[in-house]
Image 1: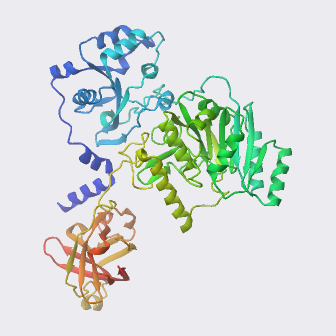
Image 2: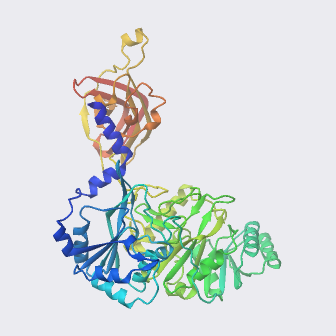
Image 3: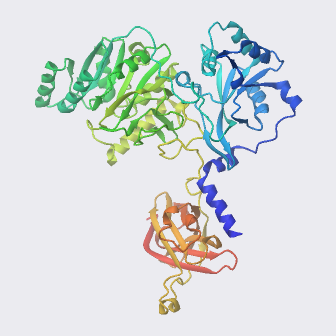
Length: 630
């Protein structure tokens, strides 16, 4: 019995999505009776919409005139969630302005549900890149019928049909709940070509605008030269100027920078001042004559000919705000930037230091994506839009000025765009160093606080990053948000007084027989402040861990003891050490309690194993001590 319970707990710790379902879903109810279902929705299979390579208008018109107020486009490659028909009517009743909405989805197979796809809010540029709406799209039948009657274009793919429905339409919503289960092994992405799952990289049309490349730089003429040379050698764009803004290089470096103008013509503005990235960018923008401003760090190097054209033409679009490029670390394909995500821990670069050799979470590193912000290390924006939001905020001298700028554009009704087909190298932080020391960390926190004072609506929120994805951990990829007790700061251990017992894990008889201790443990980390946290692993030799309750014990210099309950934690890394333990995977422990729960003092740290049935206890102490509240 214990083994099945243990395996169940290991499975749950390995599958946060299973735990997410228990938290967010009350359980899927059976489908509605067929008569009731027909009165609300007509279900239209995407695969049946096209005949002889074009949209079957007659068949679709018949479906939309069936008398049902709503129509749902779904795929045959899976099934709607159990409550989906009921959800459609409820969502349209709650969101009366919506004419169309799409839902989240996951995969479904013999082993249950997995691989959830939590989607962003309406993202027009992402939609142009691929049909991220996916396999469950609900519409108001009357609205869709009118759009069909007005349609003069030839529609050859489902993606083109959805693009047509969304063209010029603002009343599009996203239902952030799982509404469809794709058959595992199928094609959840549903891009233009289902066989190849390609992404569209269309280059917006229009007149090529003049681009002003603005490069802040100080005391690094050799780095600047590398940047200028790469732009000159690896740019096929016909009309651009370069403006270098220097906030106070030494006389020697100033002369070296001026000498570079012979090989790489650029305008040079030298104005000594404290480092303020925003002020330097704003000064460059004042001097610019281009229609598009392209801010570029001096530690950027170009290696693809079309990068400037992609960014400039995207920035020129009516609804586009800031445009970002995909940045690699030098001389390789490790990702440094593929758009900025705003989590509850603050703005972060997702996919950082991951190799760009595969598709991460539905093209986050491959497709064109709307994002909350892009880095100013390589950022393009139309000058009129830049002026409309007042440029970069000088109050944010070093950090988050780009995020602040992008949030201002969003608040003005523009969409920020990450163009993953424009790729550059970024020799990160060569110009001003890293943010590692204590003073810089304090400044970073202060500027982050100011960011959210300026944009309170975005505190812990990102329209292009689902609330169901990891929020409170610096997670590089896109994992489901489920906090186990061992990682949830809101979960505290139970603290109770405890009568210290004599250490008995290495009794005299075991020493005499040289059998060694009956238990093993290791405290990997101990942090004491306003909250005390301990992590490690604990093992009972030759006895399944599942039979034992595990606790941390603290014994003060006055002899008083305290027992701290622990949370189990998956620790598969202990297998090599705990070879005889059948429950090694759950050997991990975590304890967390507030500073005031035990009196101030110096405490000896130990562990206690209590048998769940017999109550027998074993205690063992470590050499470390906990200094609490001193």
